[in-house]
Length: 184
Image (cartoon, rainbow, N blue to C red):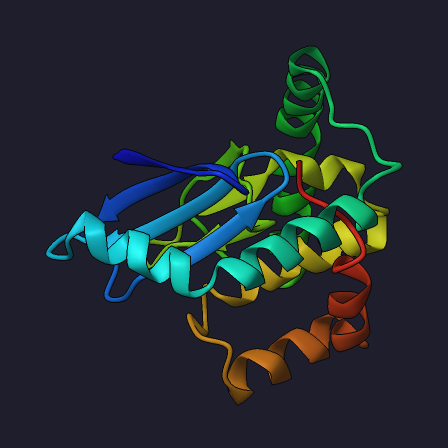
């Protein structure tokens, strides 16, 4: 990991990842600007990619400031409170839904991801974001069902959406509603 100091943006984190196949830029209100590079890429290529998209980065930072200006960032204590609640509530609800719709998974883990509400591995392990406890029950169930459907369909193809729609009618609308919520 390296840092590039930009006079307008501040610190830009340059991070190599063995699984990355291309250079990606992320702008997060909590984590700032991150450039992820494939393992074989040079850090200078990451800086060049950032500079080429700097105007987009500045626009994104401004949009995020406007969108979340009235939403305070939770303290570390508040995050730990959410984590404790998530560990009590989410595995129980996931088990209920899995039994109701005949899904089988291996393990469930509660994480504090910055970019997704949940994920499902090919080994049948499900990761859930502790921020799910902030969502209304119907959206929380949508995310849990979404991840359970990935046990049978690891992609977002037609089969996946047909299955999800059969157990969570109107799932496309719930997906849109979910975008209104911020992951801290």
